[in-house]
Length: 484
Image (tube, rainbow, N blue to C red; front, top):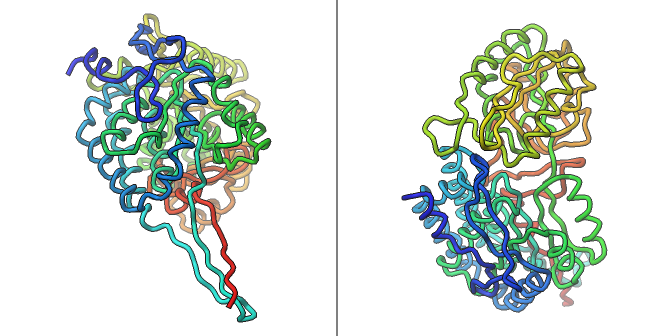
């Protein structure tokens, strides 16, 4: 299985109404390998007219798909799950080529995306309602759930297949048709996923994929069109705010999974081996390019030096290189802008008094690389205390009291995830309840699971994805009053 054959095996056109079609005017844009900067291929560059055609197809397919028995929708997802597992190697290589993450992580992401299809295949047949007697006894209440309707989905570049699975799984299970726009940097994984779902028997028009270099021009008219009834977006808080404003005009139902600024708290009584393992997971998953990545490490004074020493030792040993190479943990960042931001954040922290224990300098040569980096004595006024790093940098600060740690952790407009390491059960519960986040990693560095509700509070978003509540985001509740 060569790299060229994997790229060549993916359709490069738009997927509209069950057919692969060229963009109007034949426009295309390039997809690049972030480890080399070289061009991988060209894909169709959708215009606003192409976006409208995709929504037309989704609207036309909605009545028939909503009427499809839930079991049949679930079986489509189940077949897609099996195809993804069978093709894990080629899909993982495709993802590594366009996004950069190491192959081992890419394999894990393909399996993770597949798990969303399996989970929601099972949830499709568990959409329920209710029956109740009116308080006065003269009537009955019938409660039923129906699909929201045509849905717009926008996915990010950092988890190009998993985010597709996390959104498409519940939408399809609920009976919603979809127009989905993948990130410009990583369209190939979504195009491959569309091919898998078509092969699994998804009816024409249910899934429509528009790849474009101008997301605003293509998607804003669809949001304001009035026929789409929901938007689900994963990306930055700044873009999420703009989309929320646009959705207000037609009162679209919205799910927004936005930015994060995750604190990672280590108390004196923590198991340091577990804390360092958790730190490596929370920081280095996806090269640090994750909204759930630990962004601020707060360590109690009694274990501060030892934790920093152990984490530095582990970070310094991480092999950096192209994601296809054996043993690589630190792949390239997505582009030059990402490297520039990480460089600026590290320089700002050092200027304000932080010390570099490992890394902290750019790498010569092709590709968008930045080494695993540990900073200590990072002051509160450093930019990285407020801004997502989105790279392999672990900034560590010291604290003395529990109240001080909680105050520092909550001192952010974001509230996606917080991590907490302690062996004191009372403290674990007490601090978990005080932390302002939608998810808590208690003595573990990974929180994502298809069977759990993923999402944040404050400016980290609205709604939840995954778990038993994930499908509810794509369902409307209808109440039928019955007179007796």
